[in-house]
Structures are given as C-alpha cells and as structure tokens.
Image (cartoon, rainbow, N blue to C red):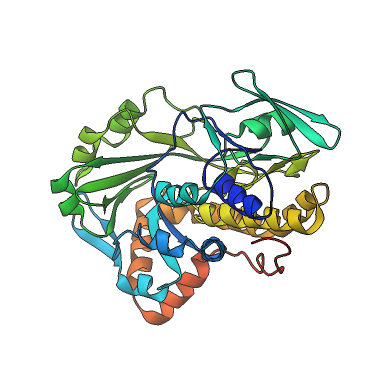
Length: 385
C-alpha cells in the first residue's frame, strides 16, 4: 500500500508494478491535484524518468521559459539569467508545472487509486502491516509506503508528531494560477520576479493565455492563516509592477504552506517506510525535491527487488540519505539568494545574475546549483524494469 498519489507515490507504484507487486494507492485529496508551481526538473530524477520511458510525455509539457528576469516595482529589468543558462542544460532539464509531472506519472500507473482516503491507524502484524483507512476499511499489506508529503499522516502514526521532524525555515510560500490573456502576454515566455527584503513575487505565462504566480515571504509564525487570500493581499498589497493584478485575480484555490525540511534518524520501522518529502523534504529553497522523490522511489523499488522487504528499507535509506542531507544543507544556504533579507543582498544577487551570462561564470554557477546526489543511481538494477 502506498499513501500519497503525488510524484513520490506514483513513481514508487510504477516501479513496483513492473517488479510484480500488487499495489494500492490511497490519496487524502478528493481528486487528483493539478497545477502547483513551476519546477526545473533535472538531475537523477530526470534519468529515472528516462528509464521509465516518460521523457517524450514530459517534453509535451515543457514550459517555454527563455530567461529568469529580476524586475523593479515599475517592471524595469534589474538583471537577467539569459538563454545561455538554459542552453547549458539543454537536454538535461525540463521546466514544467509540478502538477504536469504528476499527471504524466498518473497516466503511466496501472494500480487503483482511492481518492478521499487516508490512513487512520497502523498496526504491525506477523510479516505484514494492518492499515485502517478512513471510512473504516481495513487492509493488510506486506509494506506500507508513506509518500504523503511534508505533513505525512503515515509518519505521524508510525514515527511520531510532525514537530519532532519538521525544520521550519522561516518563510511562508504560496502558488496560484489563473487565465488572463492580457496579463499572460505582459509576462511573456520568461520567469519574472520582484524582490524586496524578505519578500519575493514571481510569475510566468502558462499555456495559452494562462499565468502562474509564486509568493514567498518571511514569517516567524509556524501557523498558517485561515484565509490565504487575505494574508497575501495584506503582505504584498503595497508592491507595484503586476502584483496588484495578481492579487485581484486570487481566489480560494491558493496553495499556501510553510517552507520546511524534514529530518529523521530513521526512515523505516517494522513494515512501514517513508519516501520523498515525508522523510527528506529539502524545501523549495533547495529545489530538486521532485527529482529526489523520483530517485528515492526508484532506489526503494530496486532494493526491494534485490533483497526483500525486511532488508531493503535500510539499504534504500543508506543510499538516499547522503544526497538528501547535502541538498538540505544547500537549501539552507540558498535562502538569502532566493529571498534576500536586505537590499544589499538583492543587489549582490542581481550582480550574480549578470555575471552568470559570462560562460566561465555560468559553468561555476551551474556546478553550485546542480543537485549534489553523487552516484545514487549507480547500483545495477536487479529484477526491476
């Protein structure tokens, strides 16, 4: 059984199906979640997608983003990462909406998904785990995989409350998308962002006449507001550029969450194992979360095929913990570049963007942001695929 029909859960299901497992997915959301924010998908996760035969489908969702542009409150360009940065990663990166990546995975998975369902209780039994689901259904499985994100219900039941494992990074993050042909044309085929101390607003055109926006602000409160729309309008209402139009377009369908990482001593217990953000969230500051989720799913399935249910979780964790830990460390260092706390840091970041258009600087910059995953995929596949 896999709890969570997101990127980690769907990838795990795909590999286990092909290794001969009977898989059931349960998803707390009443329907499949689409949209989300834009991600740059590369690294080992892209290689996993290639091994799954999904690159062509992912290319169909590639966003036409030619540059990353920092603007001031009048929309004037302050600095820009030009096409050279994307060309340097040509064939090695696909920019797309997180929901589109999940959608491609969902279409490739054969196993049933029970929406509006989550885990209510977990009980280890002889060589299995008994799971009570919402609605009263009871299932028994050889293995329960918790792939249900930063706020994992499986982790809470099997390992303890969230506050023991979540490391809050001091920011709230929101994402919202809508259709406005005029605004979409103004934004154009580039990612534009406005940064003031401790705040950042980004937006980009999506599809035909659509746009997506991204809001980030420092907030010492760990508790999320009851009204995300009112919170965003209060926090960003004084800004110029296209921000007033973005705020007017906001509706109740706003994703809002804490920027946090998950740190755990052990990712497995009895016949329960965690994968993706549930055990090793790296945060949006680090990026690579989708890539590491798919990588972890692949490694877990590979180890299960190689050595059975009892030994596989420990070997999976041994392979995945080092790249996850290094990526988390990188994310904590990167907060001041993504959401600078002072104006001089914003100026320094803008200079970094300008210098990155020089080839020799660009290479150094790419080396600093590529996921430090080492040789996590090097182990030959045994009985998987």
